[in-house]
Structure formats: C-alpha cells, structure tokens
Image (cartoon, rainbow, N blue to C red; front, side, top):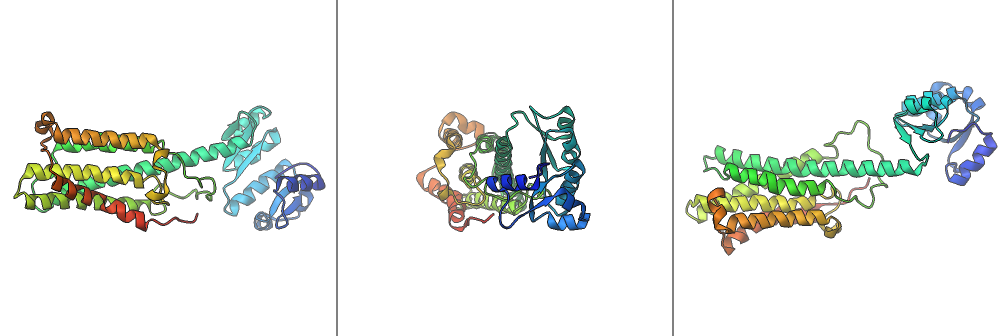
Length: 335
C-alpha cells in the first residue's frame, strides 16, 4: 500500500486490511529518501506499507520492485500517479475518478473503480490460458499421432493405413468438435491459489511439449499396431484392417480428450459432467463414427466395412490402454 497519509494512519489501515503484519514493515517517505536504490531494492521485499510518499517515491518503489524480480501492477487515479503507472508492468487506472492523463498512461482501466474487478480479470485470464494449453495439447498430440501413423507405415512398406477422406473426417469431426468444447472447459478449483507464472514462461512450459510428443507417439504406434495386427489376422484384408485403424485412431483421440482437461489431476478426480459440451461432442463423434462404419451408403465413400465383436475388442483395448495408464500415473503437482 502506497499512500500520502501519515505513517500512523497508514499503519492502522494496513493492519485492518491485513496488509501490514508482524513480519512486514512500514516505511515513510523521509526514511525512503535516505536509502539508495540498491538498499531500497533489498528492503522492498519486507516493506508492505509506504506512507507520506511523493510522486518520485512511487516511481522509485516501482523500479525497486521490478529490479528485485517482481511483476509489478500499480494502481492510481491522479496525475501524480501517471509516471509510476507508466513504469509498472501493468498500470491500472480508475475509470470513474481517474484523470485522463492516468488513463492514457495505464494498460488497464477499471470502469467501476472496484479492485475486485482486477481479481476477476486475473481469474478469467488464467482460465483462458489454461484452456488454450488444453486445446493445443489435444490437437497437436492427435496430429502427431496421425502423421506418425502414415509415416511409419510408408517407412515399413505397408499399405496406406488411412485414405485421404478418412484423415479429413478425423480432422473435421474427431479433432474439431472436442477441441472446441475444451476451449470452454470450466477451471480447476485451485486456479486462484496458484503462484503467478513467470513472464519468460512459454506456452509449452511445465513439460507440455514432452507430453504432447509422447502422447502423439502413443496414438500413432497404437493405431499402427492395430492396423498391422488386423492385416495379419485377416490375411491382408486391407479394407477391414483400414477400418480398424480408422476406428482405433478416433477412439484414441476421444479418450485422450478427457485427459487434456487437467495437467495436474487424473480423469477420476474430474467431474465428467462439469463440461456437458465435451460429453456431447464426444457422443456426436462416436455416433458419426458408427454411422460411417455401419451405414452401407458410407462404405464406398470412406472405404469402410462393418466391424465384428472381436475386432471391436482389439480396437477398444488398444485405444484405451494409454488412458488407463495415465489414470494411475498422473500425480497432482504442487504449485
């Protein structure tokens, strides 16, 4: 808290709000003048309340906090707050009582002058960021699986496991519908208990890139394994083996989408009904898959055949194996 009030007044307000504790300190502007920039930088971590400050003091405080590695948000409404707001990583001005100069210098304007709006904005930002990571994790893993299936098959001189119309169907239906549903997934309960992310953190941080690669490889190898096994069991019935590979790829992706809902909790810890749109997207994709496999009209278009019970057993077993493994290997991380 940075205020122009007297030190005793500032201390009383700071204690009432819970900002000033037994472990923190209060510093007056006259005391701040006696500190060098380096000394202020070292002390900034312990000081919770600044009293009797001038505009130049505010600017020094913001610079000291930034120099010590903090991401600084500065709020204000008057003209004298503009330099510090401009210097801060996130300058926040008041929309009702704030001056035009302060609004121009800020990166965020609180239209209702309510600080709780900042909290709501942070929460919404974290939800959007999490859902972007879910979206990317799902789509990239699935695409890696598709590419790997085709690449390895050609490398091993096997017949093409998927024809273009099947790949297009997977990209439009299996990838598209669940991915859009992930974009509106509700947040984890602890989303506001997490520590802030580093400004240098990339979208693939916390091992997301490795998770995408490993799951893509698993989807690709699983699909190719089903294809190779069915070629062997059906004595090179390419159409039947191709249908099994197509179904295996779709089911692998549809089971994987539920894993993408959280990077830190297993499927068993997440309420499946909390995102009804995802359930509907998966059911819609499954219905369309069965239609392509069992409606004769689509057999000539998608080069598919009706699968038997034993074939579905192989397809479902291979498709769900990695999802079952993830249930028992996912551990909640402390953040």
